[in-house]
Image (cartoon, rainbow, N blue to C red):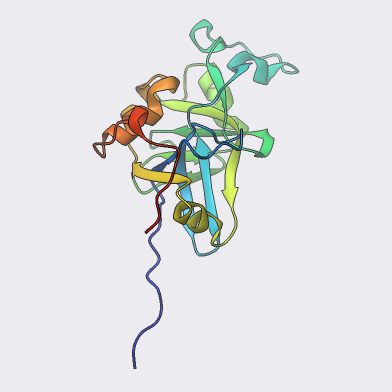
Amino acid sequence: MENTTAQFDSLRDNLLVAMPGLEDGLFTGSVTYMCEHDNEGALGIVINRPTDIKFADLFDNEDVDILPEYQNITVLAGGPVNMNRGFILHDGEREWESSMLMPNGLRLTTSRDIIHAIAKGEGPENFIITLGYAGWGPGQLEEEIADNAWLNAPANEVIIFDTPFSLRAEKALAQLGIDYHLISNQAGHA
């Protein structure tokens, strides 16, 4: 008897780069770090969508001393789901109240303890702060990939933490030998 169970290829710990034809506004030109991807759906954090919100703005109603070098850190739009909730993608081994460990050692933390530690200079060395996340239901991301909406590339901490936001898509695809500026917004199907 032939095994008809399809092998599931998880995109966890990959970067998804929106193809030029993906023009829904929310994801146009986006790069998303994939935190979870299984048969039940997917969760990612957009890592190249700066907002006008600064780190200090996250403490509007709290009396917190924030080190000057952290006050103007840009908060990113992490995706259209739970846009009023903070998500911190970071390195380091310290345990926080609510963290998800990634295969490469990065963590996604949603608890306020990390925000307070960052404000005092006691947080992780490398981090990005987002409001919201990107989510897909079962099979939805696979369908979008089949429709040529996304390319995936290996996750790379230099791209996630050290590359300017405007260059993250270009650098992610360069790992695959693809020039982001030469990609057509017309998909071909055989």
